[in-house]
Structure formats: C-alpha cells, structure tokens
Image 1 (tube, one colour):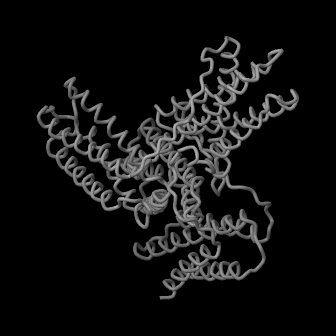
Image 2 (cartoon, helix red, strand yellow; image 1 turned 30 degrees about the horizontal axis):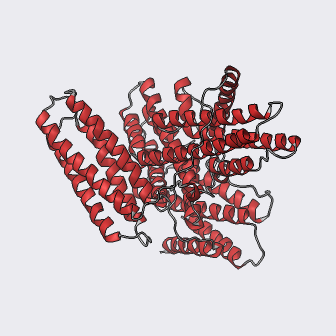
Image 3 (tube, rainbow, N blue to C red; image 1 turned 90 degrees about the vertical axis):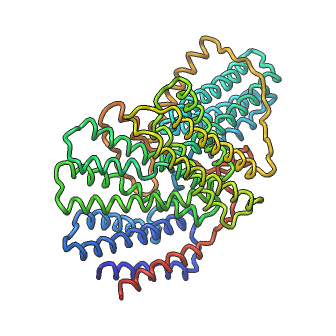
Amino acid sequence: MDLCGKLCDLLLKIAESVRQNGEPMNQIDKETMLLYLLQLNTTLSVLIKIFTTEGDIGITINESRQCILQQIAMCLTGLENVLNSNVVATKNVASVGFVKYMDLALDKLTEIDVEGELKLVWTSTENARQVIEEVLCHAMSIAQVALKDDCNVIKGSSKEVLHNFDYLVKELHQPTPRISMCNLFIDAACDKLCALERKVNAAVLKLSLKVFSECAKPLEDLHRFCLRSRQDEAALDEAVADFDLHVDRMIQVGLFAVSCSSDRNCTLRMRSCLASLEALEGELVPALTTLVQDCAVQNLYHAEMLKHYWLRQAGDLKKHIYLIIDPFAFCQVTHEVIRDINAELEERFREVSAVDKSHIKPITLQAKILYEMLLVSLVDSPIENQALIRRYLDDVICVTMEIDAAAEKLLSDGDGEMCKTNVLRVFKRCKVQENILKKLLDALSKSPTSCKAKTVSAPTTPSENIAVEEEQAMEHITTRGKQILRDRSVLYKTPNKAPLNIAVQQLHGRVPQPLSRLLHQRNMQFSHSRSETTSCDLQITDILDNLTLLSASLQQ
C-alpha cells in the first residue's frame, strides 16, 4: 500500500505541474498525456483493490500484481516520453479509418475535372483511386467483425463502388472521352460511396446493439467452462474464439464512437476504457484457461480479479458510448431487429416449430439495452417531447418485463413439449412491445427529415475484363482489410493472438476505426449532438480530483 501512496503522490505532482505549465503543447501530445494519466488513475485503483483483497484473504496474488504493475510501468514510460518530447507526435489510430478516408475520397472525386488537361485528369483520377481503395479496405475490415448479413451487404456495396469507378476509368481510356458520361460516372461513384457509408454505419449500430445486449455473457461463459475443468479442447477453443470475437466487436464499436464524438472529455474516457481492454488481451484469457489445469486459490483469485477489471472497463465504455449514439438511430435499429425476430417467431409458430425461452430472450435483452441507453442519453438532452418519450419508454420496459415473466412461466427451456396456446400468449406481448417501440421511434423523430441521396443511373452490366479486374481488386482489398484488423492498437501494442485454426483465425481481427467529420451531413446519425468539451485543464482537474480521493483513502 506504501507503493500506491507514493504513486498517487507522484501522479498528483505530474498532473499539477502539467496544469501549471505555461508552455504550449500540441493537441496530439496533450491527448496522449491525458490518456496515460487516465490509465494510471485506473490501474492504480485496480492495484489498491488487489492489495485490499490480499489483506482480506491472507494470500498474495502475485500474477495480478505483476500484470497491473507492468501496465503502470508502460504508462509511466509513455508519459515520460510525451513530457520529454522523446516521441514524435502521431495521430491515434481511431482518427485514421473508414469515415476519414470516405471524406477524402468524396473530395478527390469532386476534384476530377474531366474538361481539363488529360494529364491532370489522370493524376486526379489515380489519387481518387488510391483513396477509394483505402475506403474499401477499411470497410472490409469492419465487415470481418460485423454480423453475417451486414458483412455480405458491405461486401456487395464495396463491389458496386469498384464497378462504378471502373466505368469512369474505362470511359477515360476512350480515344475521345465523353464528358457527360464521365461526370455521370463520377456522380454515380459518389452515390455508391455514400451508400456504402450508410451501410457501414448501420452495421456498427446493429453490432453495438448485439454487443451491449450480451456485454458480460461471453466472458461469463468462458469462466464457467474453465471452472468445470473439462478436458475438451475443441469446446475450449470455441469458447475462447467467441470471447475474442466479442472483444473485437466491442473495440470496433468503441473506436467508431470515439471517432464520432466532438466531446473530448467523453472521448478520452472511452479511449482509456478501450486501452484497458487492449491491455488485458494478453492476460485475461490465459488467466482463465489456467483454471482448466490448475484451480489453485491464487489462480482463482487472479482470474476473478482480471475478470472484474475487464467487466468494469467494458461497463464504463458502454455508458460512455450511450452518450455518443444518436437515440433515434439506436431506437430505429432496435425496432427493426425486434420486428425481424417477431417475424421469425410468427413463421415458426405457423410451421408448428418449437419456440422456447431462448427464442424470446434476444427480444427482452435488446429492449432493456434500448431502455438503459435512452435513460442515459436523455439526461440534459435537448431532445423535444421528453415527457412523451419517457412515457413510451416506461411502457416499453413494462411490457418487456411482462414478456420475461410470461416466457419464464409459459415456455420451456428447449427440452419440453410446445404448447401453442402458451406460445401465442407470449407472442402477443411481443407484438405489443413492437408497436410501442414504433410509437417511441415516432416520438424521437419529432420532425423527421428524409435526406434522400440523388440517384444516378449508370450501366449495371460490367464487361468480362472489368469483372475479372474487379474480382482481383476485391481479393486484394479483402486481404488489406484483414491486415488492418490485425494491426489495430489503441495505446498498448498487444501481440497478435495465435489462431487456433483457420475458422477461428477470422475471429481474431483488430479494427482501427474512423474520425467522423461529415457524419450528420450524409444523414448517418450514429453520433448524438452534445456540447463540445475541449478544455485540457478540465481533464487535469478531474484526474487531480480522482487522485486526491485515492491518496486520501490510502492515508486513512
């Protein structure tokens, strides 16, 4: 505990000296420094928790100490480098991604002046091609962790972008390019890019709904499996792969939210949570899988300590993301997903297929996440019709609890006979919930605006040569997308995990995600418009307050 006290005093002095330092610091270094301070604040709290637990159980948890101390040492080294200007400032990976390249690609396309000098036209076309390729690579990196249907949609939309741009290149290769057709192809390429952006954004929203609705489940499942100590390598590999994919998706959603926010206070806290999850990537799974072979007390407490650390950071990340996601967009996605599940349930009911609790659970989980998200998002929000929205929100949670209770009482766990009358009683409540969600969606939209993109007709049947070239280009783009996933890093450059098999290899991706500058202009509506916080001094004050509380608790 003496170590914690000294660290607290050290960090207090660093934070205070930075606040009082009048020398200007570039924005990237400033944010990096704040991120390290937030990480040190978090890890110090975990270290104190470890020491407190050791005092309660009378056992030293050396593995947990070593894990957290290593993270603290890395943060102190990084902080020292920033303060001493030993590292050249570089942008965080979250600012180099899909939407930033999308912005640049649209700019490059509009810079193509087909009436200008041919050499300049070819130069600007090649510049646009390079940026469009980066857009598609990042889109494919998102597709690697997206839900299956969204993955296929993104791939198809990416092919359409290539297809339209190739027509532009082909027309420019003509002895006398037709200016009107070139302009048509440029407009069509812009439309297809914007369509791809909307589809990627929708994919991330659906991903966030899934990740949030089962935030702790993959980790809890893996932990329970390891405690059973069964020598089933295939099942263990599957449980680890499920958790790895869950982490990848969570970081994907988190980085996308970071890129969409103009509130630096919230952004830095999200990045700190993401950095903590990244730091645990090489520690948590080995701590859990060790229990399969050795359930010694130290191993049990070490796994439990890291598990709670992960759950706390994931929970904090979720709450911060709630402040970023647009309420209407999230409600719309939730309504669509629940509507689709209800349609599947109705089909199963008509075909007299079994319906049990597991088929109803996703509906209630996702409705609860919407309720949780809107409660956070509506606080101090400028959204109109708050009273009406809250009334519908209360109705949603009430009928959701009814569905839970009815499913628990009337439906089986999957191993009993199905009673059509009972299924119908539960299904009716699901339809009531769907109707209330539609009313809530209408209330959130208040004055809906339909921002329809102009549609441009272009030839839709590619020639054989173009089709072959497109296929080769898509293969290259997919490979680059997977590489982008593997190279993802928030703060700590964690080593890539060795894949267990070819199928599992696809689940180990890493996604750097983007800076959204034109999100609302293209009617994306992922981010929620809130007041912008840019004060470094405010961040330092928050950190100082937290460190002061920690220091005071250690002196008691």
